[in-house]
Length: 447
Image (tube, one colour):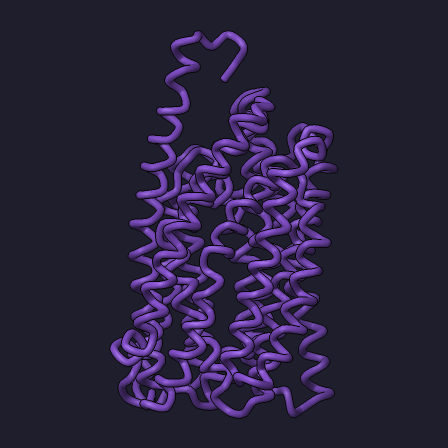
């Protein structure tokens, strides 16, 4: 709202905002349901063809490196780019926003291509020196194109989200599980881990094509045009660096979990993967969709310096999202074994696998309300350009996750790894909520 907004317009703005958030959240939730149904179908197909054997373990361990790099360096682009695009459009004009988008896209394409080439060279040399890692390493190299594809896709997602176009970015993720399912069907029962790797890479390319169609329709150029007047990127680079390092630290918890599970015997990595998947599916339907829908609103409030309105909006979003996530968690914890038996127990997936996965799944679901809350609070801190506070919080959560998972793994096996991660997420949520709600002077001083 500008200083020239009338009293009537100001009084009705919160109602329109809440209706807009609700509509966007419902749109994202509907797309997320479709995407997660595709993901569930992928899990069923993989479980039937691969069970929890060595081939699937190899794929999951190989996918860990490119996915972690993509989540760390590419995933951070969206929450950092959206606030800046909105700020430029509010304070300058649409042309300034598009020029900034082109500048970011140019840098992202260059650095992601160079980074991928460098990683491929280093990894190839390492595999030549260490033959024991060759099978998993070659699988990982085949999926490295995911990095530049994901980099460009996330810049396009940010541009679309800044214009409150959420549907296509949300539904694009359907294409990767669809490509994997198609690859498994084409390969038949004799397929190997290479089938999953090729399907994953093709899926990432398909997502980029769909996002490209949407970004073009919205008036953004697909690729950077000739050099124009450059915006200063100092603040953007700094906030991106904070968020990328935080994502790397947070992603370390996934690496820790997979590494610990690998010490528990063949099939343990697969059990952990199956058992933690449902929590991710549920968090994308409704509560996590809300965290995406509110980022443009939070960014607009931060650009207008409406601190009290922002704090009230965050409190409402947290209350509804964590309540919904907690209710879903309780429901699925109580029916965990029944759900796993109904969805996965067929073909190579045995009754013993069902029991192990159900236990891991139940402890994983404990973290749902905390992870949803963290997703919203990260958007708040991104809108306020306060990503630096995430570094000590994320580091502390990583240390807690490491210690708790190690201790609990000795008592509960793979399920202990899942419980340790849930407890660490709860501690991280508490620390972030304290910063946002109890340290008002820090927020106003920063902004």
